Image (tube, rainbow, N blue to C red; front, side, top):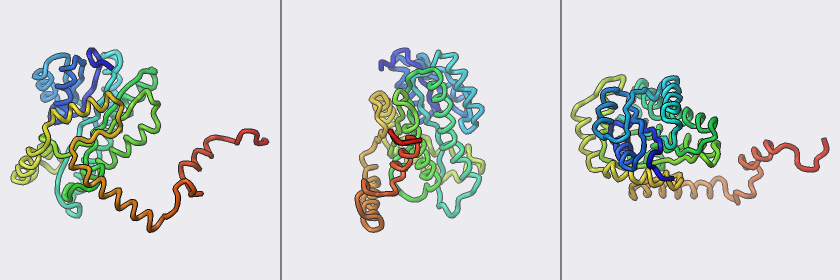
Length: 290
């Protein structure tokens, strides 16, 4: 798919990976709708990037608002070819000390926001018969424990990967699903704390988080990999080789656990969930009497 004059939507598009995605897509000739929770920031960022970019505000955790946004965008742009469900927020701190209000906030934005965005646009693609490419921003935290201290964020990114896998299984092949799994990226993710229901938090902690993030991969490089992976139709799009360590560690632990508690051939398991479901949904066997 050539991207010139194709239409794209990027949530969380006013900063970080989202802004880099919008910039790259616009440079390739795409018509891009930049979505951010802050209208002024969305508009000013769109103006700075230039090209065929428009900015609009939307709270992606609001299902009705996202549905309205999707329907209007589909009508205004004559369909949407690419959707990057990228918006997300983050906080840090021990899980045992977490506040339920921030727990609910992260899941509302990072998980329900992704489900809202993918569902709304996928329904329009399904209803129109159009092809489409959809990418969710998961994380290296979806692939295995990278480090403690960001437990709620890690849980939301596992959920995002789960959503992506099921969307991939349920949607037709003409609507591809990709899961961007970036490692440490130089973004302003730490600044999303000011949107928290508990307020902006400790300035020193936020500054420390910013110093850590500043050591990450350039957002522009991550955006390029994301777009290339989406255009190839790849599902997993990792960006940092160091993320493989946690994935391997998890795989090795799983292999050992299965060998200990569930040995045997997977093909010989009489309780295979997928096989049983396929048999039950296939209907009566051919030639069976009624």
